[in-house]
Length: 112
Image (tube, rainbow, N blue to C red; front, side, top):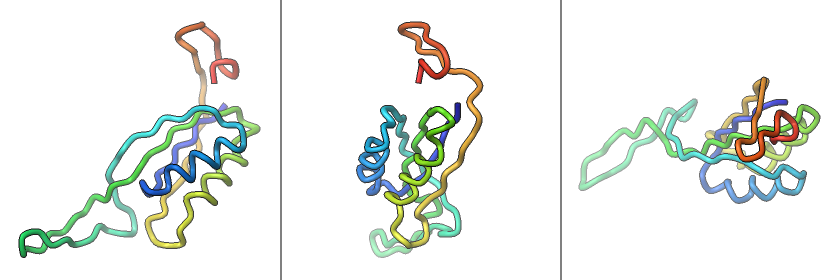
């Protein structure tokens, strides 16, 4: 089992959700987060003054899947989140040691 974390631009969320649904992934957790990478933020004007905004709004997806699905999931996220511009995001894949469905007590693959 693996857990896939993806940081993407907020406006790409619906596209990514559709793409992962098409490959049979049923669940994900979405969090609104802020951060920066190579973008290094940007400047904004507010009431005539210029401000440096270091942290940009992003969306973090957390998806637990069986190991055999990971490559297709990463490809689906990559293609659907792609804009070709700086700040498209990143995908991280981790080992998942255990999963438990609280309602039924199912473990591991049956829980996800």
